Image 1 (cartoon, rainbow over the protein chains, first blue to last red):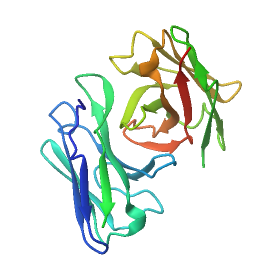
Image 2 (image 1 turned 180 degrees about the vertical axis):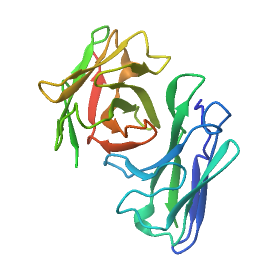
Image 3 (image 1 turned 120 degrees about the horizontal axis):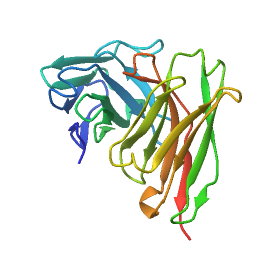
Length: 110
Length: 120
């Protein structure tokens, strides 16, 4: 059971928008920065967003993030078939003194 | 751009110690101002954080693994290592070495991952 809760799967058609949620608590998301990762099959995970909503160089603005209370959200607009991957949120948990990942969300582009 | 590459045995016997090394290229491990980390993924499962260490400071480990894990840095070889003792089949996973930004809030570089199987 992950400390951060994500939906196991989401799906949408090409060109549409999808939202992936990440729910935690005051000891993690509520008081620490969240980052998001894209994990394509057979590849290393890739940093998508950090500090809630900042994009590293090379990440398109189709990917955006936000926070509300103890939850974080990843939005992907203009879905492409190449976006099919597993997506993970992660943050520091001050109570555990440990980094925690969400359980991951499998995105299917129909 | 820092690049990471894991190396080590792909097969470890139960009760033995799993040892992996990550070679850092494209920068000095001691000047990169990063937290050096190991993360794993069990077959068909999500990412699991093992721990991280700062090259000249504290180490933090996942509470369930803390009693069995050690992450160390060798600045002379520009490498960092993972030791996981008393392994069982439940430790079979793809192991990634990774580097966190100096803030410790995001993983901004990853190795390609290496599969380690625990079996007799």
